[in-house]
Image (cartoon, rainbow, N blue to C red):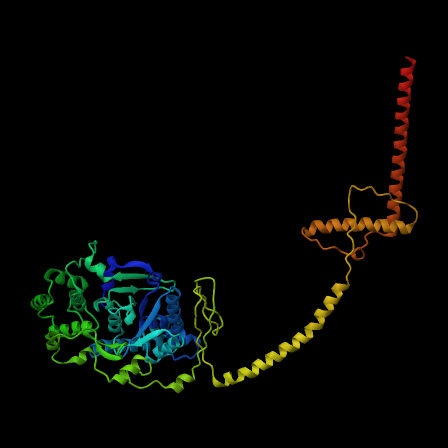
Length: 537
């Protein structure tokens, strides 16, 4: 997928960004790149055709990233791959063979009980079908998100949209995982965008004008750059042995002319170069520059750029290499997601009506996405936009919902009737309660204990006990301000103990009074003697 080692070679020109750099702009999205990445998380379920939520995680993955763009003020334009282009048939056949081989090996590992190895092989066997893309399209329609299905390659469609002005449906950049976009001449390309919006960006204008320490493209233009990519090996033409991206760059930089480079290669690699390599090379260049695309404004098919006579001659009139022409009605149906771009059959609306999509919108306070244990619970994220939980709902389940709703409503009403009397009783009881004055617990106030009778003693002792308990309760509760009834406090002293305590206190009080009287008498005598001595003198 893409030009081998091109991204690594262009690393000096790739800079980290956050996607909010494109806030307020229209950005194209290579839908199949996200569908592939999302399908890795459910590769085994897809391979085994498992029904349920787990088998559609790729939809949740795509919608999270699309909503991330919307949250950052970006208008996404989602572009899907269409039919197979003829010049890519050999590459497509080889990929199909590898997928089938990996699928067979994965099943063997699964039968042996080696689940981890099976999942790894199932991931290599992932294949995005038009039906899978159509499910995402149905969600995009529901969310009013702009999309288009290319007649053939999404890369060429995205490259074309990047040449248009925004008011004509153009885009400012393309989000993809495919390095082919550079060969197509797209000016701003965003790679490896994560779920937080961090990504890597390359601007082709900076590549051609930069004086950095990386590979120099000072004397390059987009045609020479595309020629270098084709020479290094692409989906339309394999490279000559021992010619990689570095060698191709060196040759183009040195000769600055593609015909001259081809002549040199024919001399140096005569035995290794196929006889039709030069012709195939020019066809591949033509596809990157003039592939058939869909014009959303005019709703017709056309070439990315007008075909000059030199290209027409090099193609020998075989324009199907750029993508076979299609009737306008079919091209529109494909572009609008109503027709299978490979089989040219209209999608069965009845079959898709049976798949009821439930869309739940939730908000969360953190960007970290957590998968809920319940498969019907949606993903949540910080962006505050729609995160989708896709689930099948049978017609029987839909019909049963009103009955279940009525049942639970009746139960709720009955429960409320049961609880209302309890609430009324509590309210009445609360109203009847009288708040008593808090006991006088001033520790510095003098109290006179009268030993008149047992009843008075019990009352006094109870008051002291209540004061003590109240003080302990206040210390333990700290902030408690509730006034408790005196009658509700426990009586900790028996009558016998109370009488003994009162007698002891009375004796102590009597002894103190006698001592005080003696002191006063002594003081009085001393004062009288003093004045008598004073008079005698």
